[in-house]
Image (cartoon, rainbow, N blue to C red; front, side, top):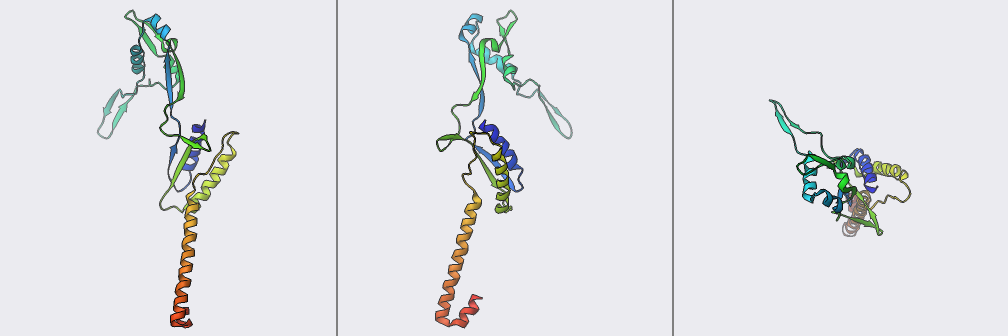
Length: 212
């Protein structure tokens, strides 16, 4: 569920003018788990290797050929890739040399689950979370981009169901604004110090000229 919301949010953030790129963190990868029924396989005299070879033969991920022309090359693919649990369950498995077949669903339980162990995992207040990072284009004004981002986040947050919340972990605009305020304050103090030194050493006329 979190992954689905994360993908929806990424699509919206990618649509903000000035977004350079976005990336996921802590998102769980899905995988299909095939649990073999040892009793059924023994009765049909099947081995795990037979099942593995049958699945590999049915999943046509490799290209079927290549068409070359003077301008372009075209890759041919067979429309037989396994993309649903039902399609995988219908995978035919041959029983010996007699030519009889059974389907994978007859000798195995097929389910979609989360890949374990996860490559990355995020905990926020001891709760499982997923994160979306966004990078701004170098020439974009981060304050304007952040304002557009906040509008998107508020709208998206209002559409979240109970039990799912959105937390802003780090907003660069706040850091940049803080650093700019600190820089302006240091410039002001520096100017005042220079004005005071010149006033003491050269008089108020020179201090006013330098200050201006």
